[in-house]
Image 1: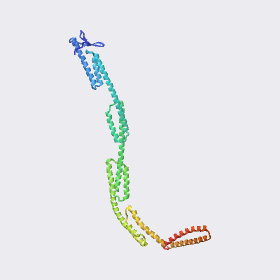
Image 2 (image 1 turned 180 degrees about the horizontal axis):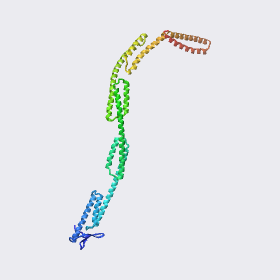
Image 3 (image 1 turned 60 degrees about the vertical axis):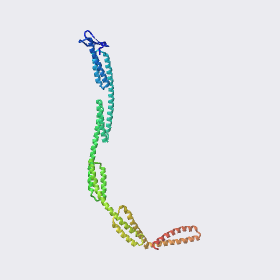
Image 4 (image 1 turned 120 degrees about the vertical axis):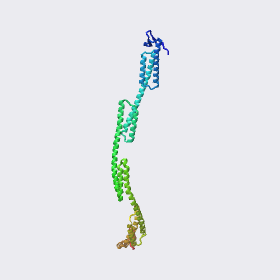
Length: 410
């Protein structure tokens, strides 16, 4: 590019000037050639500034050059422009630099606002993390809360730092919440370990008691004792995981030994009792053949013999006992009733009392009948009716007395 003489001149002494809005400014001295060559040289320096400013403008526009670095570059170029060591439209360069500085400042403010927004978001996020951590610090969902707190730490690490005072204060609360939770969890599991150890020791004793009873043949009381031990086992709580299954197997094994032995004995006993039931059913059938009682003495003797055989048989199953015993008792009651009837029939004193009562009632009936006839004959109807009511009552008593007398064969 050729030099533009409108922006500069060279005097006779070789001093080069550049024209500005404030007047001419000395650019430098040129002694090596013609004035045209001097202007061309300093014009090239101007063009170099134009290129550098153009490059900086593109960097600011197309890259993420920081505002600080861009500002430094602008000031460096501004110093070169202000030094007037070039010939050209320096004011145009200053305006371009001013414009570029405005763009950089706008970007600086924009990034500052963005950073402030990010910081505010980060502050709110960290405050939310702290609030959640402080809530979790009171939780007893030890596994879930612990996992969540670990996740919160990773989230915290991913957030940008705030100003030192705010960041340190929030971290202090966050860390305190985690420490409080860890302390409570540690105390809980220490207490749980103590409880499980206590449960283990208690269950060891229960195992020993169960094993001591396993050879017992005192079926009822021992079975009841095992039920009590089972209640104590449930109330003791769980031991440590590595001990619980072993303790239970030993405890259950001791019970199995006892109840297996009891089952075998009971099975044998049940078989024997079923056989006893069959024999007693046969005896009951024989006893029932004694009814109705026609020969009291023979029936009484036969039932006595059957009852002796009955007593010798032994136990029957409990659920069958009422029915089979009821059959024998029914026969026994029938014989007893026959005995009572026979006694009443053969008792002379009772017979005499029954005969005397019947005679007295018969005399009273006869007397009343005569009195009724006399009253009617005398025309005393009211007296006759009264005596007839009394007669009806005496006749009813007489009928009962005669029926009682018939039981004695009279």
